[in-house]
Image (cartoon, rainbow, N blue to C red; front, side, top):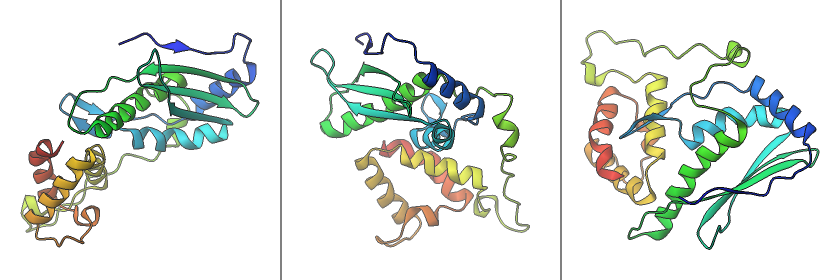
Amino acid sequence: MQPMTSSEPTSPLPHLAKALIEFQSSVPTIHDNAESYHGGFANLPGVLSKIGPALRTAGLVVSQLPEEINGQPGLRTTLMHTSGEHVSAVTPLAINSGKNGTQEWGKSVTYQRRFCLLSVLGLCVGIEDNDADIAEKAPAKPAAKIEGVADKDQPLSKEDREQCLGLIQELSPEGLKSFCQAFRSRFGLSDSDKIAPALTGVKHQQWLNENLKNHV
């Protein structure tokens, strides 16, 4: 991968620095909320949902736009403060060759956005802080078991259901389409039925974990 190029201003950025300190002291911890073949990770929706409120409170905004670097596809990430101060850098995109070039480009952009967001904001998934997490809600409790109902027919906890939805959101457009078709066929849904409302039980989670790899 080519080295990152930067267009950061050379002058001091006191307002941006102060706002970034305020942001880092108030943003909740970002936890893994999805799974891949290599283990758990925080997907892009999970990162954005955690950092959004704290960014706005601190007067910060992050812009991420495509931009070429040395004639190759890249992504420019810019952290801006309401004072006008900003830092900006371009990173190259590693795009795999495939039948659908647009799809491969989109996957690379999504992947790069997550890493660049965490990098420019000085964050790391899973690191606890000493202030913002005190106000976080307690972890969701597992769904209460229903007596006399088989394990596979038990309801999903809120946390498990959100994790399943996060995994589905990481699928490519083609993978999502084939996954939805297979899910509807397996659980007797019509073509017009939405997947999210139907994903409620342990049997759905088990089927998803066994079959998701076939729809990447």
